[in-house]
Amino acid sequence: MNRLYLIIGITLFILIIGATYNLNNIDSKNNKNNENNKNEVDYIDEVLYKGKIPLPIENFIKVTSGFGYRESVVNNDGKQISGGKSHLGIDLVGKQNSRVISIADGEVTFSGWQNGYGNCVEIKHISEDKKFFYSFYGHMQDNSLQVKKGQKVSIGQVIGIQGTTGNSTGDHLHFEIRTNTGSSKYAIDPAPYLFEEK
Ligand SMILES: [Zn+2]
Image 1 (cartoon, protein in one colour):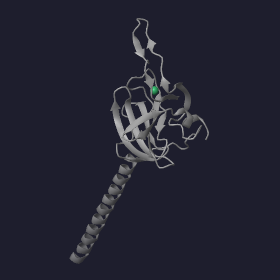
Image 2 (cartoon, helix red, strand yellow):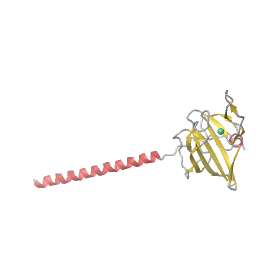
Image 3 (cartoon, helix red, strand yellow):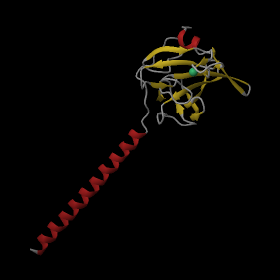
Image 4 (tube, helix red, strand yellow):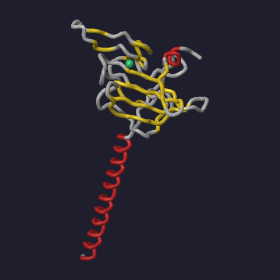
């Protein structure tokens, strides 16, 4: 009789230990999945081309300001509120809360706040002729930046959400292409690359 109790006892003990071990396993698997979800990278299903490089914003509607000199805008009191200086990029408007994407594979060289540009990202790319160039994206929404400095990104990868942070009067993406000469970068007009087939 005693032996029977002993066997039942040992069997129960083994079953309980086994069940606990399984539960722990399931738990750690779930945790791993959650971590993967947190680090999941967001891509646009299909990047849209109108020119040689893809549009950096989804649901594109229109260009509101081109590259180059911008007339100064003066309010009713005669106070200048914008313009009167060179515009180093192109302003693209997409539907509200549209995602902003990297126009090519590259590495993030800046991600954060800059006066005037608000929440912005700069990415370094290598062109077909093996030269460096940079793409720059400004005015994105607070807490929307998806990438960090030093991070590798792919074409179509979401880097943030269109917003109006910094010196901006409405939702839009300020987009620049910067090329490299020696140690200094300078901005060039992105329009031919965005809108002209080559
Ligand atoms: Zn702009």
